[in-house]
Image (cartoon, rainbow, N blue to C red):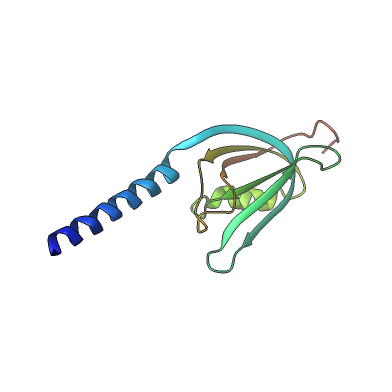
Length: 121
């Protein structure tokens, strides 16, 4: 009986570890988006995550929401610096996320300031 329970517990742990590894390390897509950085904030009750938004149009009708991992300190500091400016974001889209990683499936890996096509900087 103990052997069966041990086997079930090990199987569950291995399946959960494989699921976490798949979500964390396997990207669904990668891409680049540009827009005016309108928000960067650290939020959450149980786990604090960095969340942001860029506006991809003059009217702000198209908003791209994204998350940033805590380990990407350089990206976070650049986003704080570029608040209100036009930026180009390089991101990775995951199949899903966990609440301690971020609210969205889009995780920014690089950020650069860019000249706005709409307004002069």
